[in-house]
Image (tube, rainbow, N blue to C red):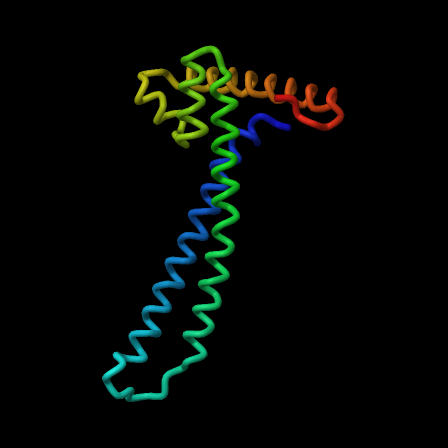
Amino acid sequence: MDARAFLERPHQLKELVDTTVDEVKVLQSMAEQVRAQLGPEHEPVKHTPDVYAMQDIVIRLAEAREREAQPRREYAEAIAEVGLMLVKIQDTKVRDFMTKKFLEFMSLSEIGMIKSYGRTWCQNTCRKGIAMVQEMLDADEEKTSECGGKKEP
């Protein structure tokens, strides 16, 4: 497995979760608007309500919530996997940098500003950390292939 893809997976899943959350919010807003158009229960309705509009929105809302659950689980799993991998990095500066970059989703310039590191240092540390993670992933793959496809603890 490619280390960069492994490390960037939580960020990609977070964006997917954020997109589905936004979709749910839009559908909830639409449902509230349709409900407001129907009017309060004790007030006579001045026009024929479109009950199918509400039904359609409720169905779409339920489907969006179902789609939201899977990426949330995958996101939590990816964060845990990356976190466990980064904990194995012995160099504390590299580990701290990698945590900020790949678990807190900070840019190189943000990390540089917080830690007072230059851009070159940040780029070199990122490359170094990715190489360390790649070595660990390769070692894990070797263990898996030696055990007949089962991962050793």
